[in-house]
Length: 113
Image (cartoon, rainbow, N blue to C red):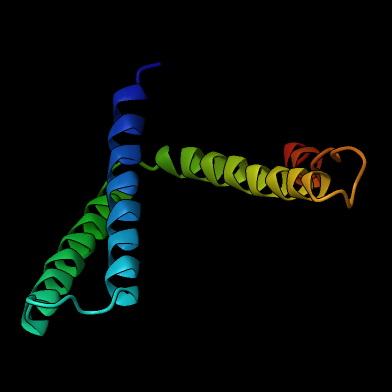
């Protein structure tokens, strides 16, 4: 496909932003460690938030420049939602609440749209 490099670039930006969001969540949860000044935590947080904001701008710019990405983004979201639903059914099976996994409702519903 001709737009594969564009999709890869988009996914790399999204992955970087997701990773930085996890870093921010981790920083918010950890207690200050002995020997590390609170200002250092604040500096790290500011640095990561700045990069995350930059990545958001790059993602928005790509979507503005290449409108075909909107369909790809919608497709990715669809796949993620189906995965969340399927994982939930698998969890119910592991816990013994269901005897077998159910077919994802969203797989059938969103494919018919």
